[in-house]
Amino acid sequence: MTIPSLKLGEFHIYWLNGGHFRLDGGTMFGAVPKVLWEKKCIADKKNTIPMCNDVLLVKTPDHNILIDTGIGNKLSDKLLSIFQVTKEWSLITELAEVGLTRADIDLVLLTHCDFDHAGGIVMQSQNKEELSFPNAVHYIQQKEWEDVERPNRRAQSTYWPENFSLLKKKGKLQIISGDREVISGIKLIHTGGHTRGHQMVELCSNGETAVHLGDLYPTHAHTNPLWIMAYDNFPLEVIDRKEEYFNYYQKLDSWFTFYHDHTVKACKLDEQGLVNFSNNDSLIAP
Ligand SMILES: [Zn+2]
Figure 1 (cartoon, rainbow, N blue to C red):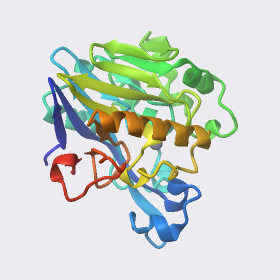
Figure 2: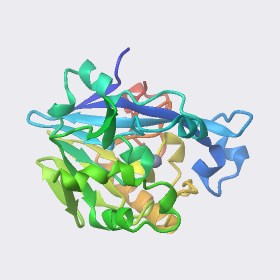
Figure 3: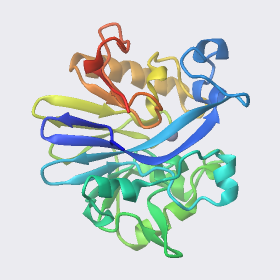
Figure 4: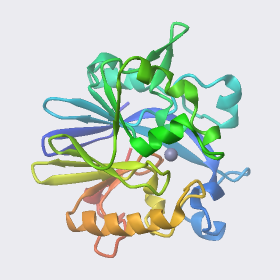
């Protein structure tokens, strides 16, 4: 199996399997009528659509960095069935395919703490729970961490304590407030919108740029700034941030990378703000 990848200056980006599942199509498109979104995503009889949870590995000359961690391997049979997991988390195996072990990861950048992004922080290994990446410093926004410690009514069902239990204990948590360049060319930017503490990742190397907008831009079908998810906690903020970042990064001819997209791993936007499917140089497909 070939792992999708993109060379960005001196960086190499890989999309690794953090688990596939199916979600209700309506929740993925919020107020957008089904007659419109089903032209882009085909739903099954139960109205669900396929979703990836692609963990991005960014290899730089000196560091191995993960963006988010997938759903992890701690889901019970009941949860695997509720979330219709169609492909289980195989992040460690896929890391091995690019020549890395769990111990080689230096940084884990968490866009936010929903279970589908943070589930792989702690893994089940030989009947005990361990940090999946024992040597990595895990970056989380202050506001996000506050909500992990005191989740609101909505977050209670998606911020699972077992995903964070070992982070503090092992001293591998780095809480930041606002924007931060974590290493040269890799910057975390606080966005809010999807959650209070949601952050995105900007990658720059040798004049080339890629931006990972996390759940602000979950799939290429969400390119219209108004097409947002019912899961977004602050919808108007999401729309504003999308307009701002699409405009800014399109002008830089930046790649936009995806976490949940089943068919496109990264794309560029044209001057009209659209994905040009006839130009293969502007797409990374699996
Ligand atoms: Zn998500």
